[in-house]
Image (cartoon, rainbow, N blue to C red; front, top):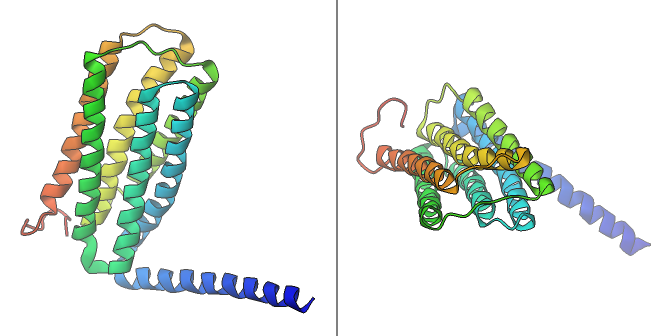
Length: 235
């Protein structure tokens, strides 16, 4: 009985310590950053978790539908979720002077993931194949991608007054993720409706949005490189 009581006390103490840590982190963030950046960091953390879960859901849907493309798309979403989490948590720990450095990390992660996506899309362009997803998997893909796009659009709207490099980098990640998700949504919807489509056209669309995402990632890296001038909020 005493052992059980002691264990309950330990569990309660751990919960209290967790809340104390969260409160201290919240106070640090509000002290180090302006309200706009604080909001962007909180949103990035929440979206990072959500996108990681959505990406895993897309990977599972891809496995059920036996589609390498859906799995690749899901892994891209997981990567973008991870980039948000790494950028936001790293900036919080390092303080206000780290905005450009962690924005650059976000840009590098976006560029790397997008290059890998373009490589796969290019391979699919030379080896096209028609995909007909099972109805359940197709519906799941459509739901996951629409939720992802909705979250990205919400983030773009709520951070439209971005003032720092890290805010702008996170906005660009949302834009790139939406473009990649759209290429999958189009294919899944056509599959649900039973409408035939040209796999070469699909591959061309994927290559195009992938190259746009690469350009967006490179723009972040260039704007936040060492010695780059601070202009238009990239500070």
